[in-house]
Length: 206
Image (cartoon, rainbow, N blue to C red):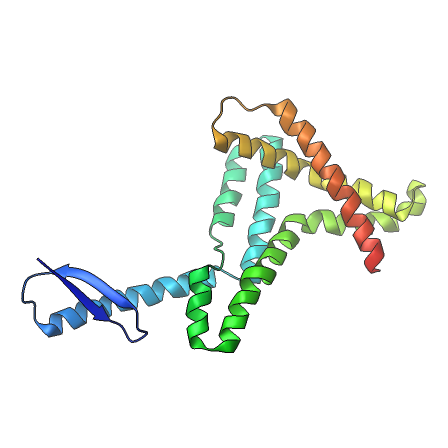
């Protein structure tokens, strides 16, 4: 067997083994087959990156974690599998975009460092963020301030996802049985932080 190297149209080098003295036509044909498979994989990867896939992944993370806290493990796993279909923009993606020009390069950098992280946050905390202004409307009836009502609604909406996320992390580490007391205590603290931050931010931006 011989090791062959063929450069593709995009300067990517394809290396593969084949019979000794394989005809050039066969080598080029196989290299083209590898090239088409690579292009298809890149397209599939790029369709799984970006703002909206990140939002969807964050949403599925929120729902899945909440279902874990409620004990709906099968449903939670389905949401985690959907979240896992989202892929992040990589340094290789950025480098490939850079070869295409300045604008594609800047777009890839923006996607990697801004829109994807932002999309994940919006998806994960969308429901708690939505709960804050809705509760603020009801603040007079609840006899508490707008920030207080928003904080309460945000915390109650977020606490299940925080607890479920802690439970899932303990399962993944495989250190033994899940410590539900720690997961709940940490989840309440995490939800409290979100409860304070999100409503205050909402008021400041209004």
